[in-house]
Length: 321
Image (cartoon, rainbow, N blue to C red; front, side):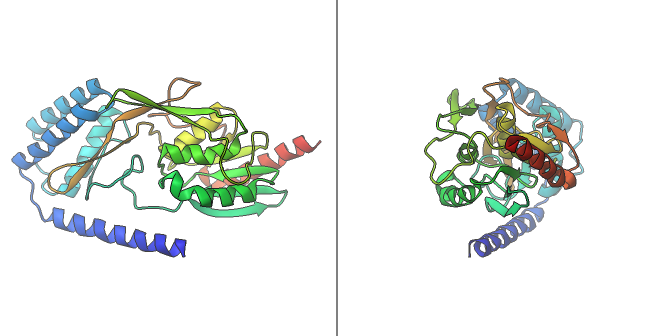
């Protein structure tokens, strides 16, 4: 029933996005309307972008490019959004900076993706290794708590665990903390901090000792699968457990987006994602922005499960000796 509902939501979201693109692509942009979009981008970045000095550089260069006529041939919002995204990411070196056509949507880091279920496939592999696919951290922890408890409790008695984040595009750091809590023990562990320019505040995210159900715990071997598509909150999950030496990463270097934020509406049906914060790992004092999370064992994403499974078997055999 839940899977069917999610599929319906995906269909509705896709249809809404197509309608929005159809409506906005009927708009013919002029030099004045393009400048209006650039003005809105400038205000949004000046007001909220986590790096104000970078915002100033971006805005100045976008204006210069407009003055040189680099946008003159772009008359439809979709093409303009794609070009702006390319320029923003090139100038800001920030993969969360993005313009799209469509309405402002809630959420912090999935870059406007349609809603996705939290968990995908789960199974018990030979040798008593639990495999769990985590597709998204996009839903809030209060919504996914029961499902998380059920799935993690079912894996708690396994001898080892493989967590698959190869298709995970990110989500809420609170949900990251909830699921990560099942890999730790009875004491809170600081996973990550997020500094936000608005309000000049820092939010700390700890494991939760009192989660419901059974935990995998702090001692069993854990392997995390990654791909180049693993992004944002999913990268945080991998980075947190890697730096705490709680898991080994197997797969590809991840996408490299560590700056959370939110969407801001622009004229002519466009939306800008503005990163208002940055991750600060308690151990490295930095994050994975622009460089991605480097795997402990680098293999192609398609081979990651096979390799991690062999490593898990060896790790379990070493414990049992």
